[in-house]
Picture 1 (cartoon, rainbow, N blue to C red):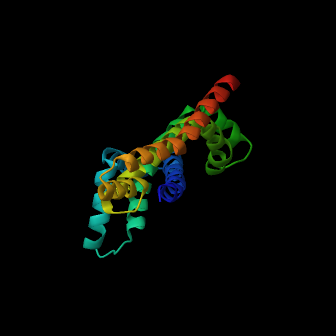
Picture 2 (cartoon, helix red, strand yellow; picture 1 turned 90 degrees about the vertical axis):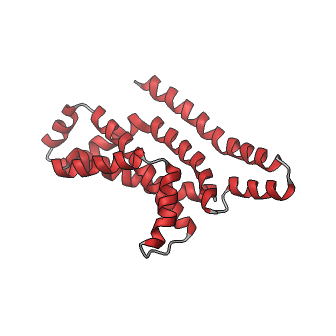
Picture 3 (cartoon, rainbow, N blue to C red; picture 1 turned 180 degrees about the vertical axis):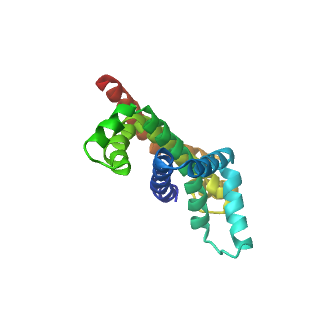
Length: 197
């Protein structure tokens, strides 16, 4: 379930975050204000609180949501805010001359952003994107609060039945085995990008 949550929340969060950042770079002042409120709101709420609000609040609004959907939705809101800020920083790091050069070739502002600015910005923020993805994998453990049979929840259930802490240690080892290659990849990627600059 940990991997499934990650495979749902990360792509949706990246897509939504990219839309937020792109719209902020193109948008009108009132749109930017709304998007900044969105980002600030979801970055300010702890993921656990957001999860509880979505899981227990959705039925109160008449939306009967399966546990996986509630967890994925709350993680997507949270991650999209962080990914949006990462992409925004990447877009702002690109010199204005890049946009002007792209526009001088006949591209619209949106086309220039999509084909010229975003690829460069993504390259600049790739280590941050990967680092945030590692955090998302670690945050999946809070899904156990709403009874989603996620890795930590299953370990706690077995530990409770056997009165043996070994399942919790095993869960920690599994998280380590899942995340260690990603962290190593991130380190190599950062060194590779630094060498190219």
